[in-house]
Image (cartoon, rainbow over all chains, first blue to last red; front, side):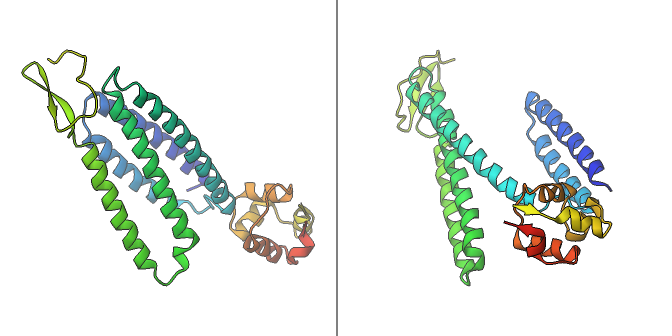
Length: 181
Length: 62
């Protein structure tokens, strides 16, 4: 298979994934996107192996590194500014807070993963105690995962019960102003 | 950075595509190298020199 044909098929698959994802969201089915993503990834890996030409070389990797670094910086700045704005106005609409928290945590997670990968390629890859660092990274990831799950578990929130807002845990924002139905 | 890749390539009657295949990069990278717009790794510079049957210092000038 030629590189051009591979890129054309890749584009078609990407468009198909976007269509399937949007339809799945509309029908609130989350299994279809997951299955689509797995199948599409496997198909793309298989297609990539069929290409005899060079798909990416050192120049592409250098550009990819630079682009990823810029993308992380831009996303982080935008997410942090949006997080502060949403958090400042959380009293107007309680739903702003989880969005702000999602932005804050996604930025932290992105930075964390970036640092891990950077340090792995920079130092850890060449050290004898590689397994020790990998174990530390796994433990840190588990703690971060548990903390994130705890934060988004729905604890410390206002719950609508029998037409009244009831505090569940210790929510740090005022009772929602929207009617409880 | 200036390169003499084009001259050496012409001497050996090699196309950009053929040279790219010999050194394991995309043709676009050879174009950028010839124009002096890409600073290659030592390995790529060595591979290009070997493919063009010369030495690194003869094709790359800094």
